Amino acid sequence: MIDFNIDFALEKRTNRLVDKLYLLLHTSYDFKLLNVRSPAAHRQRSIRIEATGASTTIKTLFLNLESQDSVHHAAKKIASGELGIPKIDFLLNNAGIMAVPYKKIDGYESQFFCNHLSHFLFMNLILSHIKSPGGRILSITSLGHRRSPVRFDDINFKDGEVYNRWVGYGQAKTAIILFAIGLNKRFSETKGIQSYSVHPGTIDGTGLGEHLDFIAEGFKDENGNWKFPTVTFDQGVATYLYGALSPELDGKGGAYLTESQIKDTEFPMTDEDTERLWELSNSILGTKY
Image 1 (spheres, rainbow, N blue to C red):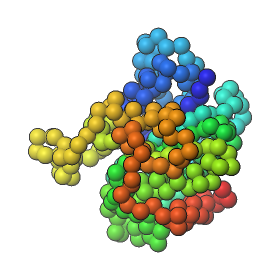
Image 2: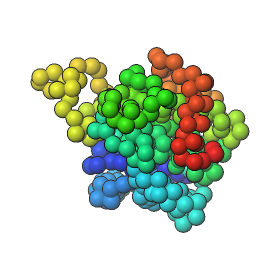
Image 3: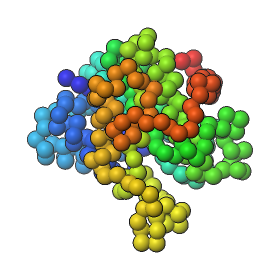
């Protein structure tokens, strides 16, 4: 039996990539715990899963990454045992936002808060419930990290005065990669829990950028065709599953995964920045992880 904790806490509508991942996992494994924000989307997805005839037990945990209270509440439900899941084999930190207008949540820029800080908090709160040894933590990133390092001296873009939503997205995606490296450094040897960052590829139709005009942004031509390579839903999901299940990755924690293989991030992810981000995250949240 394998228990997955899939975190899709910020989805705004039915997401085809999420659907594909759910269906594959439910068909092959006893897949129990889903973190979701939208009850309506979850009900639709449950109907499609049940239609496959897969025999599974589904436990739902509602979690909103825009709220620290929600993160704490969700973690307490796991710790209480009421969900009936003693250990989680794989945690997929998938929820996120992309290139949104400037706003702050609890004093910090929203993309950095939702895409990094809330995952940092949730993962550390439930760490004792992740299978040890043998558990895996996957944090979903993208090529967006190429747009910006973590702006340690100005996380909030001078309170929005110098904000660029794509630079904000890049900062958050770099933070995700550094977080995965930091997790692995702390827990791969002491607990046997390995951590990876995962870029599933550019996939049209996921809903992540439904608020954006990709033609005006320069990502698509006037006919609506992407100007750079994309991947199918199946290819994107394959990298998720590779990270969660492949024995090839044993002992290779901290790696950046894309196209179902380990690749270089092409931009330096230093030990200094990894530790600096961990310390900053603790400082912001008032924690001592």
